[in-house]
Length: 112
Image (cartoon, rainbow, N blue to C red):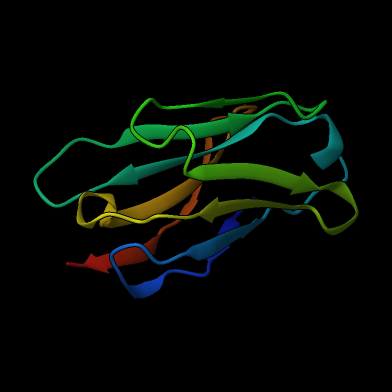
């Protein structure tokens, strides 16, 4: 199984981006999924997660600015990122809890 993240890019501080992650498989609606990020020279950190029934949790650093959501009909999760800051610059990865499956990351760069 390969998760495919997309939607990254270059944006100015204060701007917005929406990341998407497609997770193939017939069990998607039963899966908890999340987003992580890794900036150069740092460890990968957790950003947000969404349960199979839509409960969400966020890291303190993104709470109030980022929103995770899911569309079970499209086997896709999203990360809406608003009020972006330069410190949000990182490679963003999606993750499926079941089986500890990671996708290829997508680069987000926020310029000051």
